[in-house]
Image (cartoon, rainbow, N blue to C red; front, side, top):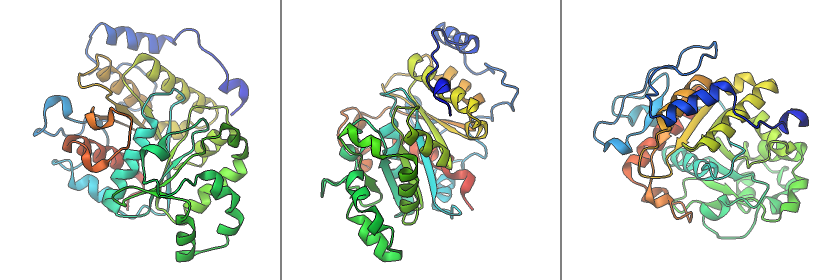
Length: 337
């Protein structure tokens, strides 16, 4: 991924993106196909949850679809043997697009079903907040402390490794997932070179089945590129706003130009609703990213997430939990056996 590619700028949206936004802003329907990428047409929508209020129903484009009640099939996917540890990279260079929230809730959802072996890692280079919003603050250790002792920790195995690594992790209040907090000092980012990042990933994959990584915003960072290239599943996070979705689209173009077209095609797009009302852009953006990525999940607004404080999975609205159950299953479905 060359610097010239990562640093390129676009003063105006591409024609296909401009047409999408113009039509969405005019309030036209997003149900018909918007863009021809010379790919397969988007899969049909998954079954909707009829017992929920309309504004809270999760919108999904996914094959194969979940079971009609939207719960048992998704839970079965999350409980399944994944064929080895799986790394999920949550990415969008734009800030404020719910990357941290998505990383935490994907880990919380998978952990609530699997019961163990799930980690959320805050790999944001600029004072990421995942360590503050998730996990109990039983200590103040971060990735910096782990790296200081990494040579020693890597020598352990099995239960001894899990026990030793646990000294550097925080835990969700319900114990369903672990947290590797980021370092608040931005100067520390220089130590997260590709070799070190791969060592950390290899270490946590020895103790956890699902590793959810908040990748931060710097696409030119060797750290960011290493996580993306090492990931089993790319999760594109965005909100139904023009600037957020345009940046996500730009990132996908960047990855395709860097030779990661297959990763883009197999990515999952997560559209998070930041307000109770339905955005006029939502349907069109879901259709747009449905053409670019393997699946699109829309997760509803939840007042419990609005404060920006601790994320307590157990306090979420039942509709939010169901939406996240479907979304997390969509992310892990290709690996479920």
